Length: 455
Ligand SMILES: Nc1nc2c(c(=O)[nH]1)N(C=O)[C@@H](CNc1ccc(C(=O)N[C@@H](CCC(=O)O)C(=O)O)cc1)CN2
Ligand SMILES: Nc1nc2c(ncn2[C@@H]2O[C@H](COP(=O)(O)OP(=O)(O)OP(=O)(O)O)[C@@H](O)[C@H]2O)c(=O)[nH]1
Ligand SMILES: [Mg+2]
Image (cartoon, rainbow, N blue to C red; front, side):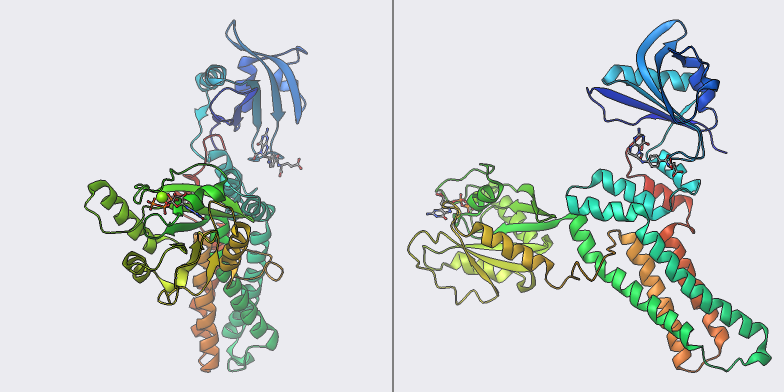
């Protein structure tokens, strides 16, 4: 059906083993031109799903000693014939073997093309193919666990259930429209009304899970801001448990943005230390201040740091006035020293957490509070097993939800059933969009363009 593709599936660099993979009708023929099994068996006579020791030759030139996995379709990753050459790792040998396969008739695979074939040949739906990529890019246990559920088919199956419910409604509507005498004005039977309400609820729950899913997958951008010298960089270092940012007693030490990721109970927290915000004539520092102010807007969460050992200053107020009360946690630092600060004027901040960055006081409590803050308002783990992490799924499900709402409105207004037809089709189409049963080349190009080569 397709031509035969080949790629190096292991990362570039020196490693114990490198894998060069081939998929397509000519895989076996091409292998037979380059592989000599120790057993002296001809490639055509090898048993499927076996691994075979031998050597790769380019003509009479020995390229490497290898193990070859020999897998005949359709029980393979792509459903096509697959050959995996396990050679010695390193830049050169994998490249040479790949070149040899290309010379013997394979074509170099595009990014994600093996997985794209698994999709096109029906072994995976699009949500599962997307999960493969998410697993590779996954940065925390939790995000990988969500992706593994998706690869297992959890989302695919749920979409299948919703489609079936809509199809039942569509079938009924079609019968009634085809045989008007059967009672075109009768209300929709209760079980079919339930179907519509269930699809509405389920799509709504999935859509609502996206914010959490996105957070688990992409992380929460958390800016540490405040006037100079309050201890922002000290706080970053303490959380990271390493001397990442320069700390001095001089106000205006940090000038550029410093970004590091930590794993906060499964959520990647992207911590950004910023330049202290103040009015200054220093050209470089000013650029830093501008970046800090931008981040107050862009960040998902702002940690507003103040120095408890000093009285409130105009500069604290200036930063405070720029804050967005919806996404700020106050950090009262330097509690190891005598308290001089009055927090009352800083009334945009709903919650204050007391710490000492240099004495490591209150840090784990602060992390607990940040975690609580992040997951508050989110769907709880126990009640919500399916979490979507992909904006493509969210947009399609929003169309589903809208279509079902339209159908319910048609029913509530007592309008004729044929007015439901367009929305029923839209509900089905949008669900099929999630799983990729309806897709375009452009969409597939978009989905697979983020893959690694050889995947
Ligand atoms: N060497 C190697 N390791 C690998 C992969 C690979 O392609 N090659 N994988 C690539 O991602 C992952 C494993 N995923 C796989 C998924 C499906 C099939 C497969 O052959 N499925 C067939 C047959 C299953 C069976 O034997 O019952 C099928 O579903 O029909 C293989 C690997 C991770 N490790
Ligand atoms: N006593 C005490 N000193 C602290 C604490 N946290 C920070 N400091 C001191 O405060 C000074 C400034 O710390 P930094 O972490 O550089 O402050 P900053 O907010 O990053 O400053 P800029 O980068 O200039 O905006 C340093 O001398 C730190 O040692 C604390 O909890 N207690
Ligand atoms: Mg600093």
